[in-house]
Length: 141
Image 1 (tube, one colour):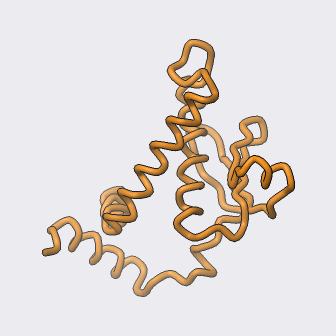
Image 2 (tube, one colour):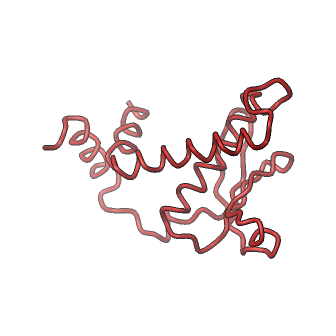
């Protein structure tokens, strides 16, 4: 059974888009910008480098450049998770929690928290595909 919220979200998406977005127009991350607080965070899709390959990193946040790099050719769900992961790094840093005395001042604590939360959020959004469309419809009211 479809909930009232899910039905509203689906109707909103149909009305707003008319059809499903093509992968070429909305599916690309490269050269996108995340607006976070007073800053614009650029997203670049990059080819893996030897250093990144050896560290098993598939994304990184470079705070002094206001840049998130995401490795190319990830599985779509992994790419979503990586974007959420790097976004969470931006947010916890902006909240001051990575500074001395902050709850995530230890890099390992920060990484563990961001890893766990991005995995959980990815799972929630995957299992409840209507949720993002519903929230988007409420932002536009």
